[in-house]
Length: 341
Image 1 (cartoon, rainbow, N blue to C red):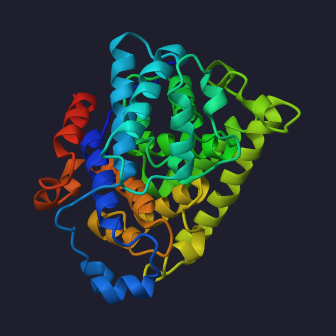
Image 2: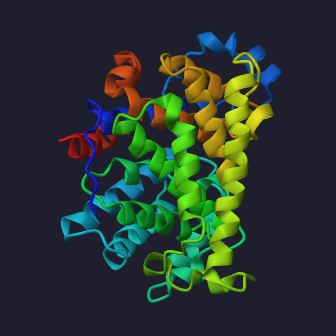
């Protein structure tokens, strides 16, 4: 069954801009603890968008995925075979670009170097032991594309993750991230979001998407494909429980990483990005600033926070003065307009 939601006004544009703005805001603060960030940038609620507003590999790879999806869907319905080629090509182009100089993650570099070998099955490039946040910091476009079935959205989210990060938790967290973006763009109430995500995780817990993933699971030590993917969903369910507690009890003035993790791994990036969004649902710029002033993977956390807030509020969430000077603005706006049309 194909489910076509009614997207929030300019949800795709808002989500992509928010992702890039969070990336640029968190780029200078990554690898710093909160006292160091405050000493350098002042009160976190007053953080300014850097000049120039330069992004990291997080936004670059989001755009690569978005372009790959656009190319795949120009050829017809989205299928694993139709998607793999264009997205793989875009990832390799990113890997070989001189602009790939923004401290990219090792997993993406190793996997993309293997993906460039023509004829190599992508499963041989996938880093089966890695669940780094690179799997899901770039997945927002999958949640923003119009007209996908639930199976296509889930499969595309997991496949794009698996091209580089083959750990089952990377696949499940990427699927959940895309689902969260889709739910918010479709008008889901933020107060219901954690419950919806937990239900989704439980429903999918034992479902290995063999049409999209092929024999990826055989690279692991798991006895069955179901056992393989259950490990990923179980870790995501555990972090969603922590998120639910944090939304009720964590102070917005405290480092969110203390509650839901530093975000270097996929499930923690999802949870901490969601926590920042949910603590400031009606203040999207404040949510970005909170995400950027964290002790963990600040740019990726803020990326995800911006993707969620932008999907919920649309493009009006972001100050024009910020949106007008973000790096790659024309590319972000072009993809956003396509999916908002």
